[in-house]
Image (cartoon, rainbow, N blue to C red; front, side, top):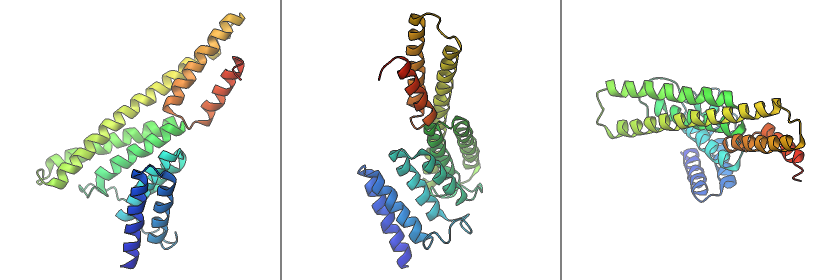
Length: 233
């Protein structure tokens, strides 16, 4: 139909903008595609629990939003993508089913992590690993293990487990950095020298946490305070 062609062409434009690094334009095209697919956002999540196209569009827009630094928006889009795919345990295509869900859960976790929502990130990384492992077990029990689609799904699922495991390492790094910062904040330096040394260390811990969560406003505020205490205007 005309609508399907329009959505497909907008989606292709969104993809090529993304590949070329024009992320804002990519977000705009995916938004136009979502609008066209849902008749101007009127038919949003009412009846879309099995809407692969909408799921993929939200998942793609989330990736583009991540690149613009809109981490909360990216996490929200991942949530919408998950709502559009049923959590049934058939292998599904790569646009739905467990392979897609695991990948989107990873993306969602990464968005939460970058925004500084550590608890949500940890939960989503663990969900990604759990759902990928369950799906791999089902694939192993199925009869079409040799099929190309199954091999592809297998690859995506294993990739999700790797990505999520790395993500959990980042979660730990963030927590360790904050614990370090808290310890320093607790031992107020008596002398000016000790105070300065503490501020320098504090700044190191905050920078370490920011390398994991560059979108955390709270961390940026703390960094400003640490820099001010060092008179690094």
